[in-house]
Amino acid sequence: MTDLIELRDAVSADVSRIVDLNEEALPTVNSVPAEFFRGFLDGRPRETAGAAIFRVAVDQVSDEAVGFLLALRPGEAYDSVNYRWFSARYSHFLYVDRIVIGPEAQGKGLGPLMYRDLVQAGERLETPPQRICCEVNLRPRNEQSLRFHQRFGFKPQGSHETEGGKKFVSLLTYSMPPVQPS
Image (cartoon, rainbow, N blue to C red; front, side):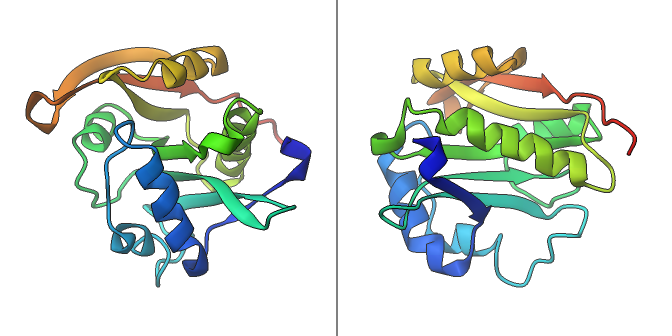
């Protein structure tokens, strides 16, 4: 399936479908309004230190987004306990706020494709990150995501409760490969 997928930067026209995908993925991600996603697109130059890497996976047959990945660099004024946890410990990282793959595209190699794309995007940054950071729910348990991140090479760095004890997350990092001089 991945040969029929185009990965590209998200644009405002994608927001409605991104919200739908996000809502389909509850409770593995939090519900957020369209304005949340638009805030990473509208008027925010990608070259700034805290700008997001916001990518969509588009099925070339249906021309519909089947997944998305939103990652932030350090320095973002972002109200997330998990982002702040990583920010307090690391200076050069990419924080995956969410990766969502629609049910019709799950198990077809899209997750690894999107993460390899993120690694490549990180390598092109002026200051390449040393790691990719994310959290995965232990409560409610997201077994599929835990297995995926372990297979990709993510390692647990800690855990904590969020949302007043509703969720318990594992905080994971993936060590970026050293950037080869060109």
